[in-house]
Image (cartoon, rainbow, N blue to C red; front, side):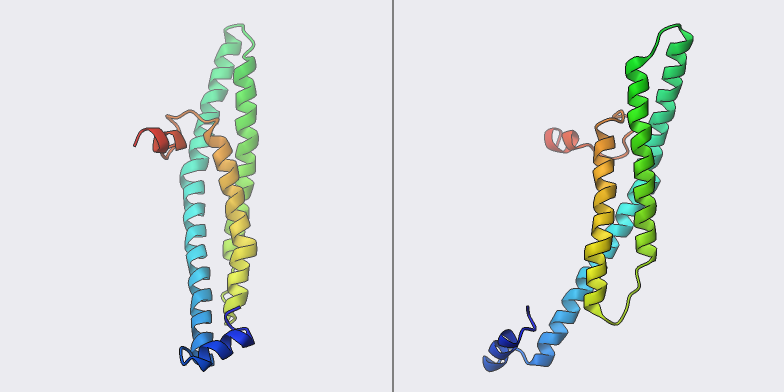
Amino acid sequence: HLLDEKNVALFSRQGIYSQAELRSRYEIGLEYYAKAINIEAETCLMMAEREIFPACAKFAGEMGRVVRDIREAGVEPVAEARLLKFVTERNVKLFDAINNLRDSILATKHTEDALENAQYERYIIIPAMAKVREIADDLESLVGKEYWPFPTYDDLLFNV
């Protein structure tokens, strides 16, 4: 609403900013917002595809070996197999969410319209990041601590 007529009139009347100065501040704010979200998205993508997904895949692989070994010992690994199923299902969702985020970042077209760029970040990139985060948070509670590549919430809350 910075560029609403009443606001422009107020700032101009008080000698604080001219209409051109307000427009500049508006454009700069939108550009800053879009760039900041883009940096967050690139960081989210890097963490998810280089750290979180490989850790979850490694955990699933180890659980698969555990399930096989228990079966070979003549016992049905009910809990272990169920955990393996939960993790692999979420790994697929994480993989898809990572690809969606990557595609959304690659589809970003930095136009001359700062509002259009900011709206793309707000309505496309932020939800794509949120989906990656949601699935990663879910996996964090399932994957063994020794596999998880970052401090957990418990580590941050209780071991600082």
